[in-house]
Image (cartoon, rainbow, N blue to C red; front, side, top):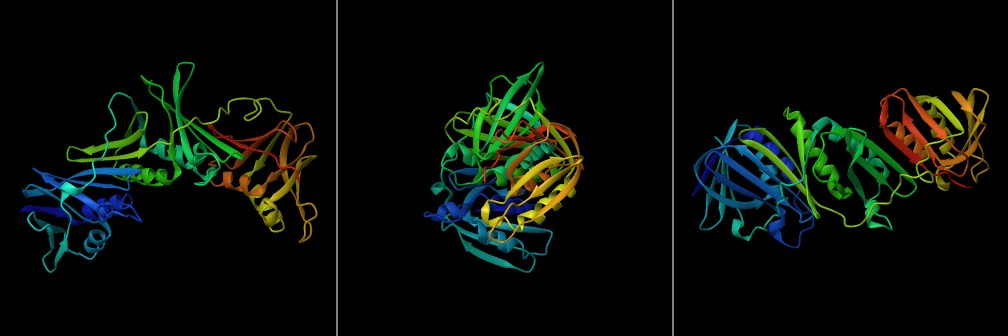
Length: 382
């Protein structure tokens, strides 16, 4: 009989994370379960929905080895009700009955034999990048808002990650796009043996980010990224008995090449430096009248301010102005206001730099305090 004793607080944290990876609408009951395996002084917990999976090892007092699968939601709900510091989990391998015991509680839960659990793929160890956990989380946060889970092109429903070399420095580049806007964030990393070019589904990236955040909470500063043609894995060794790995399938296809003047211009005729909070407030005023027409608004430069107006709409018309620092030619361009306010949320500086070629070319927005971040917005024609 499998017999283990565990710290309740630590188990609660891990089961809560693992539960994010089980299938929400499984046709197979086994995919709603967590896989538990006890061996020597370690409990390993696995979960998958067949698109992504997680593998967590934690310290445990193991009296007898063994393995079982148990419904993730049920286990999660039970351990959250237990007030003791430790609990005992026993498994009868003959009838797959799982007994969860505290000083005052006993739960007998029917499990499914571990032999029925799906085999989880492993990513080869050949290709690997090491990255600071905080930098990885920042890279995801800087670009994730630009993509939708639904798009006419599958490659635009995921985060594009690649390595590039500029001079003597290698960068890990994050890029996301919905074809109307694009965000790119670059992080310096050590040189890699094999170039990385992968697209990770948006439906998986939030759970991956949560695992990375948990590792950071436990003072694990480095995340190792391993990748192959079909899979990518993020892993962190927290201590000798504590390790987490999360793996995702990849979207197959080629992300559009956006490094050209038509998509990401580098030469501009006009540059605007605006206080981000004042800009956001002004845009939100105008969007009260333009929500039904793609949040359309017109930006034009005049003296040391930009004018923002709605034009004539079914609801009426509005305009406002924001003091700015403007260099270059006068310009007038239509944009989706929400695309601009979305960028404000992830900008650390007090200002935003808007660089414009003309009314036909994409606008390039930058954070003056973070040169590694670039945000592109296509203009709108009314």
